Each structure stands twice: as structure tokens, then as C-alpha cells.
Length: 77
Image (cartoon, rainbow, N blue to C red; front, side):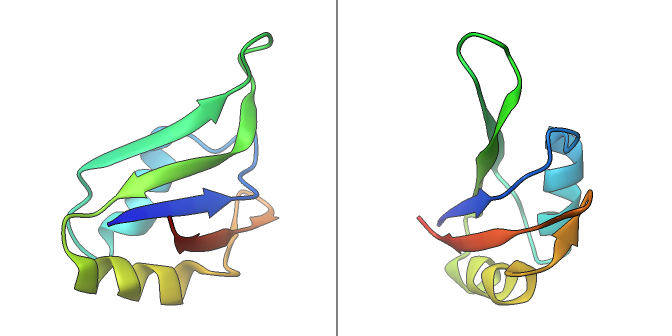
């Protein structure tokens, strides 16, 4: 299942985001969308988790949680 993660801090790294979601199960892929011109994170990314059950648990737990000073917006994509 693809998970949208919004309101990311520019300081959040791929490994930071992966670590948060690996607490719930296997993470197949993590991306953070960059700005085309500046190379600075746009503030959102995606996490792919093969297990729908693990993904739903991650969404329920991570929605509204703080990461690097920002409150996450997490939903199924």
C-alpha cells in the first residue's frame, strides 16, 4: 500500500522517515519529493509497505505524530 506523508520538515531524511514506518512492518520504498529548482524537500513523501495490515496500522499510529518539529499528515494514497 502506498502511504502519503505530508508536512515533512526540510530536515527529515529518507532514513528518518523509513525508521518511523519500519516500526510497523516491512518498508519497500521511501521517497521525499524535491523541489525542481532548489533541491529542497517540498514537505511530502511516500512510503510503500507491502502489507496492507501493517500499512493501516502505520497510518493510524503516525497520523498527527511529530517528526523533526512538524506534525505529520498521513493517509492512504
